[in-house]
Amino acid sequence: NAGVTQTPKFQVLKTGQSMTLQCAQDMNHNSMYWYRQDPGMGLRLIYYSASEGTTDKGEVPNGYNVSRLNKREFSLRLESAAPSQTSVYFCATRGTGVDTQYFGPGTRLTVL
Amino acid sequence: QKEVEQNSGPLSVPEGAIASLNCTYSDRVSQSFFWYRQYSGKSPELIMSIYSNGDKEDGRFTAQLNKASQYVSLLIRDSQPSDSATYLCAVNPGGANSKLTFGKGITLSVRP
Picture 1: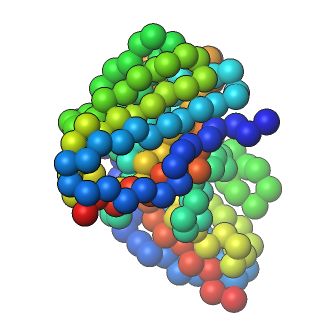
Picture 2: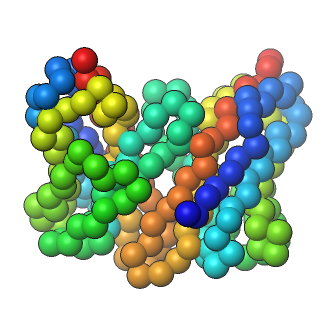
């Protein structure tokens, strides 16, 4: 039972390159979230998905797209990476009827 | 904009002391409140949740909630060096699409 997994763990991109961050969960949770964490800024919500087939913007969605492929998987795509997107990205999940969110191990992304 | 404020750190306490971490929030209709602990380079993990006014105790941890004052705190008794981490306060305003708003976190250092 892996919980929430994220791939890759580390990534270095050049400005303008694209990439997709993957998140998968085996907790049978409906809701999934993507956050970014920057020094001194706390966790900020990028996008979330309340259930399979639905997605919605969070606090800082510009420059990102998401796909809720199925109940297990929620991916985050950077179409044209910028240095301002250098950050640690966390995926999280939440079960129906509860408030607790469970976090994956994170992806550390550097954009040069 | 909904805000969650944590008193600025870092906070340093000697081993065995009580560490007091404070958090205020701006959205008066907030329903549920969480404390996450995050070790350096790791993902946040939930340590306490509280929903009603008053105190909630779990081992060496006590969460305190005062909705009238829009204030939530975390007390760590008999602080240990292993408690050294960043503590994130998170608030959920409630509703169908439950989203957390996080504070920026406060770093606690417990001196042996």
